[in-house]
Length: 409
Image 1: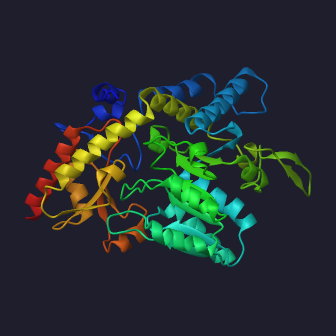
Image 2: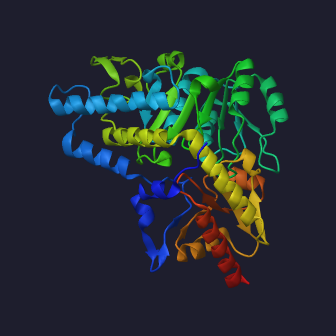
Image 3: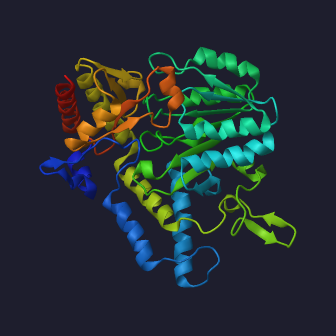
């Protein structure tokens, strides 16, 4: 596989040319929070608003027809990107969080009763914890958790023991936003199905960075966000198997999710429209589709290989700094995320000093408080990488940490 032309790729992202401080070029190491946007995505959304802006599905004028075509083309494009058999299995949402909440609200409330078991993991983002906690409080559903080992992997032996509880649902992240751990999704799903459970994968961190095929995984639900894969904020995706989506009740009520409305009753629309009430984020869907085209033009295998090279180099360099503790596994089992602590400084102080040098990282619990509790630390500093990240940026990070150490002595 030929290496990526990173300098050419970086030119596609206008924001990477920005100076944060005089003489300090932006070093953007926060792609796990949101990825930057290439010109292709920005121009696609601009073109939609300039030439085709209209509400979709019901208008007969040319703008409405163009907007509808762009929106439904985006659905088909996303379906192809993740290998879905049918574009109707793609539900547009605002983000990963809303997609998971949709499943919890619609499938969960229609199928779970008091005493039923849901299996989650200790490394979940709050978006894949809180919706199930809310459901558990409402329906007295039992939550169980796959433990995380000291080196940041799921304890698969304990998982198999938990499966003996006959869970109705297994919901897990394919890639941890803190540890970077790439979980064995195919194996987890196969074992869950053998135990009779439905599966949901939080793909917020995996879909932008590694090849994901829903048919190969045989996953029942997959949730992910546009803004983490070079697309716009405010656009997300829920993939669901047709048989499941067709049986689920609507999530929200209003326009476009109905087939017929009487004064005292209604008949819901077919999928996917049954789950897309109200005016959708058409421009955002257009932007997501452009992001899919952009990632496809580079190749997901090539993206994954580049990030593996960058994170391997980052681990090698950071491990040479005395006082740095890195969470998670080695590079071979990790995506482009490195979360760490520095023994002499709080993560927020580390992030603030790095910012003075133009380096953008994230500090805090990263919406994964239980995982930080597992490691008995309140917060970490997180550097996260993407297609535009370079070894030189890792070097800037290391130099910045040396400045932190000099300040705190």
